[in-house]
Length: 430
Image (cartoon, rainbow, N blue to C red; front, side, top):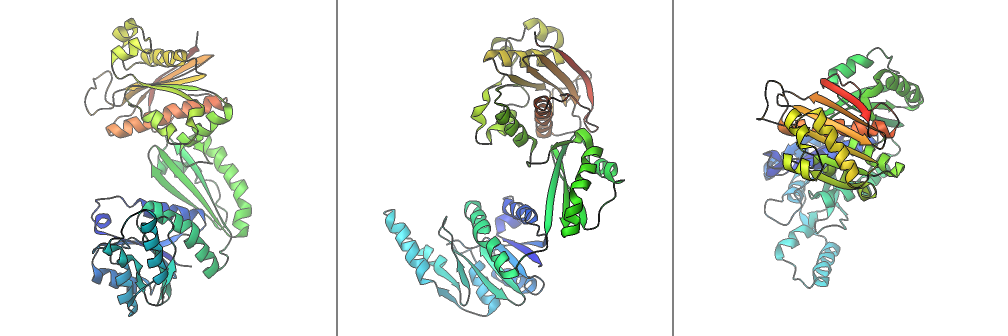
């Protein structure tokens, strides 16, 4: 099956908004063992839409079209499909009754513009949209089915999961047996990872892909067919052996989610003390439901005064070693842990830039510490030649990886080839 996607809208084409629907859809399809052959983006111009629908319907078996189903004059997907197929737009009476009832139950009068959303190409099949006012529809043109979906993510995603995927299964039957497995790494470059595993023989039917998305590089192992799937366990074992500490999770898309689940599984508590990361570390964890099970507090101690008064960092430590130092990071982690008697605490203090560095401590210098009830660990890393945001992102990843390794009873500090570390220390908590 040849699957393509067409994203519509001037705001998408011009880059005013990021097409998160397209990346989500591509990734979801890959998880189902289906690879997209092409993705196209087109603006809100009738002639361009018509031309693209006709062109791609000659090459694909199935095309998901996203956007252009709203009530305004620049929503042209239904009209363009009717023109491309040489049919008229017709009112779908049941959908009009649905919309009128929807507005009536809310004590509102339906605007006339919404009537446009009741028009679909003659001969097409309406696709229900329980989350919004714009229905989807599907229609055959040349060799391809075109499946139209709204652009609002909260409407698009349920339609894909609940209607589009079942349609693929019903229309195209069982796809060849496939399996996708992802290994998420940090601290290593894409090319160095590829070189590292190049000596492992690749079984027939298995292919590799790499997706750099700081702070991670994701290695995708894709198996097609039963023999390749049978070879997958041994091949993955060989990859794990070769990659060693580079891999930080295989079951979740991010290190933050891996740590979140480990914390919940361990019934442990956590405190955070952040300076240059400015709350990013806590934000990454509270993205996941259930973080209140373990996250007791997060303190953004940006100033020295906050470090002293809230985290009880000794003034002498700050005066002698400075705010960005292993000594201050250790004191911050200890203070955060003691504040509410947490099982673990993480601290981050550094120079995110683009200004504020010195010859001794250039921009990108970050001290990261972990404290538990027995020991403390701290390392100073150099995240040079990276943007302010990337310094913060990478700092949080290193902190989370230290905690992850400790939860797994591994050594919390490991070398990262792409992240030089100048100092690392372990000492007793008390």
